Image 1 (cartoon, rainbow, N blue to C red):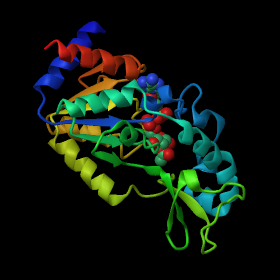
Image 2 (cartoon, protein in one colour):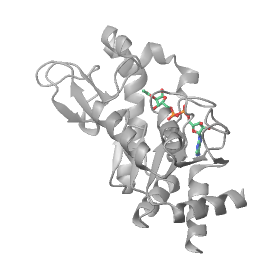
Image 3 (cartoon, rainbow, N blue to C red):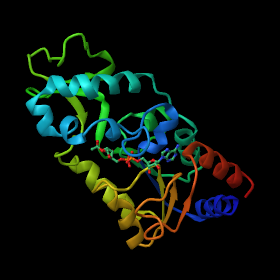
Amino acid sequence: MHDLIKQAAEDLVAAKYVVALTGAGISTESGIPPFRGKGGLWERFDPMEIAHIDAFMKDPAKVWNILVKEMKEIVDQAQPNDGHNGLVKLEKMNKLQTVITQNIDGLHQAAGNTDVIEFHGNFAWQRCMDCSKKYETREVDVSEIPPRCDCGGILRPNAVLFGEMIPSGALWRSRQVATDCDLMLVVGTSAVVQPAALMPVIAKQTGAKVVEINPERTPLTGEISDYLIKGKAGDVMNRIIEEMGKK
Ligand code: OAD
């Protein structure tokens, strides 16, 4: 692994335009469970039953009770970890321009990254399904489920549910930065959910290096990514940054 850490440090030093694509794995060290794999949310629940827009429309109270309340408790408490902080250090070194994240937890912004594209929306806000008024999630009263807007409409997370479109601005900008970058760091994503998983493919096809940080192989490994640094995001980021300091 040491050789790959050195390689990543060299590649980052040489790169002119770096973009990171992150997924749930970067937030596991902050106590937020991933979706797939051991301890993942989709091991306990069928996403089509509780995270699909049709499920929400059919029974919003069920989705709130099973998914949203629990997410609110976890996300309200979560703090950025060394993985998020490492991406902030890279930005301060002028070695990271943009983070595209599939996460809805707001931890990249909390850590201090300034250009974060929220590919799947965010959990910081709820919006009224009738009038679109927004409420900060941490201030939403969950003593009555589903919570309601002043107008009486039902509140829903401002995040993308299965069966919904990616916000067009996020999709458009992500494709743009994936095309423009010369290095993409792909951190903590299983790279199976489209169209997010296409971003490294676009980066590769337009000439960028693609570097994965993940304890496990993904469909990108050996196909799209130049190499995989097998490990946890926090530890790997710390080691890369330490190595860059020696250059
Ligand atoms: P997944 O849960 O599918 O994948 C998490 C990835 O993180 C796996 O590849 C793990 O091996 C890796 N991982 C676990 N711990 C890690 C650590 N400490 N450091 C680095 N990597 C680690 O999460 P996503 O790829 O983000 O969509 O899932 C994509 C989308 O599927 C989510 O945004 C969500 C979900 O359904 C929606 O809700 C629309």
